[in-house]
Image 1 (tube, rainbow, N blue to C red):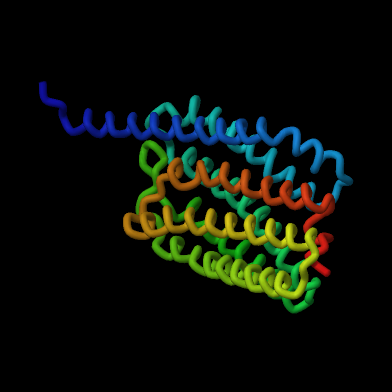
Image 2: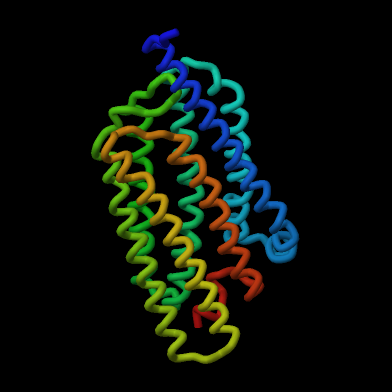
Length: 275
């Protein structure tokens, strides 16, 4: 028996919802697994240390990620599974995803900037440059959130369409700044490594360059995997674009802090790499 167009569209929509639900549950499972395998180190290197803003960054990265993905699973298995979805529902969910990914990107950005600032012996010029970069990234994030909430339309599964073209390219300056920060970090680490041969310092610099490179490659991968497709199609598939990046950014932030704490026992900005 022939299937009419409306039935075909419905089947496509149901397939989209099923795929989205699998991805959302998978993203939460990934975070729970990461928590299970690092819980012992977290207790030793995070919770046994005095409270400071580095611990605050860790808490945001770890526990806000778990909360955000738990909320996504609840929404996916309840309200977001009942089609058709209203535009206001989609906008609210999109804003939540943008905010959640923004929190984790900001935490990761702070970690990278703190280390670069420390490597340059807290040079005020470097601090001012990083502050300006941070403000610029916040402004870009706010602009993207505004455009996605007020200027974007959604289909019945909450995939956006006719996304404002300029919104996509707002992310280009952010990626450019990440390249600058990573390049400055690599140059400074190699400069310090060439002048000093202290085992502890060498190990700290090794961790800084390894984690910094992993962070940079993660952000670059997210950018390459999402921005060109969104720019070409002007369609933002939120489950494919934002769900797993939240988990990956959360894991990267937690690992970066924990790795430095494991070596130094102090906050990244107080490490010997600053001397």
